[in-house]
Amino acid sequence: MDISAERSDALLTDDGESSISGNVLISQGSLQINADQAVVTRVKGDPVKITLTGNPARMQQMNDNGELMKASARQIVYLLNVEQISLLGNVIIDQARGSMRGESIRYDIKTGRLTGGGDGTRVQMRIEPKAPVKK
Image 1: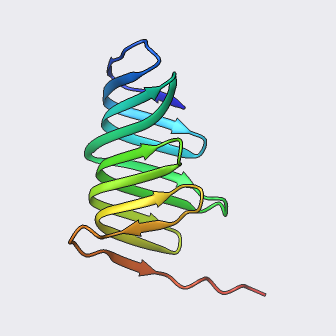
Image 2: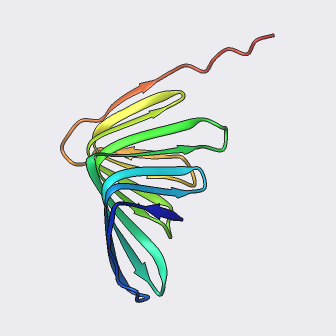
């Protein structure tokens, strides 16, 4: 994982939180994240959780089919060890074959599954048909 920002407040211990702020850029494989602030939580020296905030915070990732997924929210919580991302506050997710909007959506990186709602607000989805195969 590569992280860059304008400022940092970090502990050089194996366990704890480090705060970075100002045009935060994080990349890991095809995952790219931009935010105003990030808090990185480490356990036994490994990052286990990243909490990003922004107006909005943005992320994008290429899936196994080569299709780009883009998302934005006021807060993004990335749990590295279970490869799940929770998006909170004015969430917008756009993918090649559809989109999803709501206040609370969870994204499973391994499966590509999006789970939304359950917070008393409505989830909106648009599902595009598969493009016909040209002969």
